[in-house]
Image (cartoon, rainbow over all chains, first blue to last red; front, top):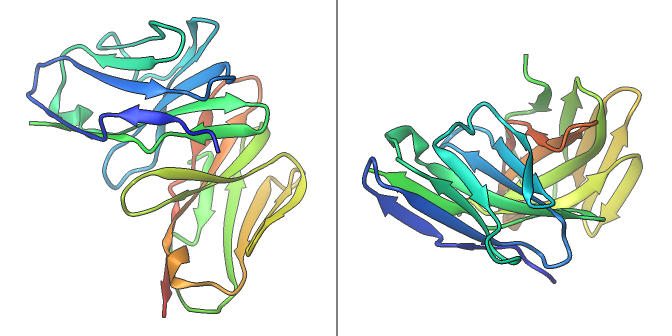
Length: 111
Length: 109
């Protein structure tokens, strides 16, 4: 069964550093998403991406965040200058005709 | 007020019991997802519904669009069903999902 692959599974970074979270969506899906889940809280929408541009973004997705599909297969989330409160599980998802497929997540820990 | 409400928040049951988890939402939706999240954190999509009922193995999901309500049922529950079950709705005209807070299910052997 096709999967959405996320790397790394866990990343620890110093506050103020830039991080790039990587995702490989399902190949024939056209819609891509990033979500995050702070420990103990519900999953929150960050951004949706279609046709090489952002289609929707939440209030959380401020100027520190950016997304890119650099090579037609990878879908990346960049956080420019990480803050302690960016520590969370970040999920990538892609959407096809039969619904969403989620990646297994990247646990980001900012210290 | 949360746009997606789940009940109960926590549920502990004995192996073999019939489990029902409820989800109510207040926004117009194009589809509803039931998701499963295991302790490691990964999310698995169980069902996507826009009407009626779907069944997969011991899992059954129903949705009533008029009442803005969905239920997830587990028959003959098993300890391996222990997980957090999340209701999530795809909002009409918006390309995003709103998630419920989840129901933590614990099945005792």
